Image (cartoon, rainbow, N blue to C red; front, side):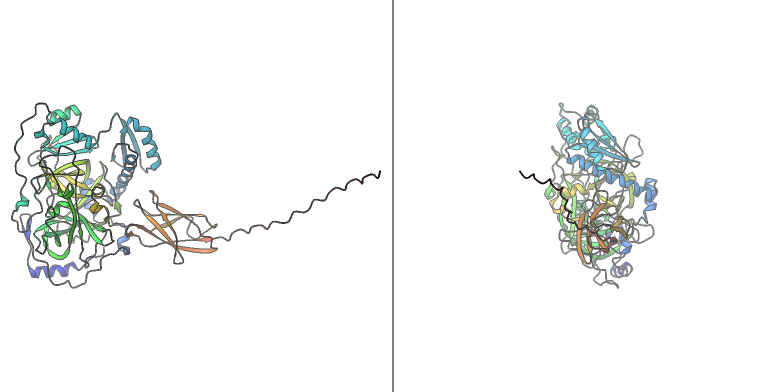
Length: 604
């Protein structure tokens, strides 16, 4: 893949300045090297930039090890199965747009969609109209209960002391699930010098509340509501995955304005800001409620092995951890106070070149040498296999087991609520401290941001595996005005002509059909003939588009470029031979019909 800079030269400069030391998961990092690398970094991609030939190719290199290890699949099977997630996510959105509550999941390339009995006929029509390219089973139930509805019921009926033991409420393939064991213990971004700070401390113990005899325990409520209750063991509290993480395979250091970096987090998905300039999407809690401003690129030799700081990265812009303005509540809120965990980095160093790719942390190689391209943004579906990238654990994969609300300890000794996804995290191998802000993908589609984790792996059969929590990317962008207009950088495939064959003879105005492989919603194609825009057409959900053949006689060659926001494809070409229009017959004057002679009138 194209390298944004000569890393070997830069590392040599950093080493000359100071040596990075790993200290119990934290490190002492040198200041940013003042000298420049031997080679000048490539300029940042602007809105009009197009991917190189290397970038445009589908890259599954480096997937093999993690996917075979974590999922027992080949890279080809993983990417093929990920298409089911895209289809189910689209069908679910269409159902919700029609006001139909639904629960969807995928398994082995098949989809299951649950709706209430009174919505069955409407749901059938929506599914039939979607032309879903996979087997979809429609299941009807008496009632579909959402996470928000269950949460409201828990707060109303369960003892307050028990409510405070909530870790998350999620919707799984087997139904709604309550996870209990305590809120997330927010340790904040780790100090580079290994010393603790106020941000490193877990929330202090709260005053215990007397039991309300008129309310239920979580166990009793779960039994009555026929909901699965999972209790974590030991340190089963979710921890904010800040500090030592790298998103997209690149780690970054964090500092207050004008100071040297003292904390670590992960670079998020590379993105475009509303003006089309480079930006990054990452985790909101990495800003420590807005107290951190500056970010720096941190080089790694391997996951969790720091080599030094190479470049200024950018400056934090909008961030939200919990509710608006980093708001939380003293305890588990009485209402479903839905929040998120997301931030953007703006004013990117112009010497850097941000690609639409995520590092797969290839073994014994530079983190830039093994990447997977991002081809769009999607919601995740329960049952789909997701892979995440972060500076602590590298590249690892796990199935999405739930979607819903999880609770994380904030920086003000409060509780922050975040909406997202849950995955198994055995022995913290998928998501650990320092992976916050990292990328979460299903196939090639961006679905989330690394946010938090909780422990529970103690060898007992009656306790769950450790859990990973991901911020839902689509949800976060809907929920925050500050991020909604940012667009994840992703590759758009070049359009191809599919019908008729290239160079075929057609009549003027005949329909020409093309396709953009893997096109995301909102993609358009510009058709240019003789250097002038001929047509601009929308791409359908199955990636096809059409436009009429010109009226010009003879061979017509057209250039086609697909675009989705600031993301543009390379140029595709096609051609047809427009046949001369058939001559219109000239109408002839009708021949006068001879009249029959009339009998002479008799002379009186």
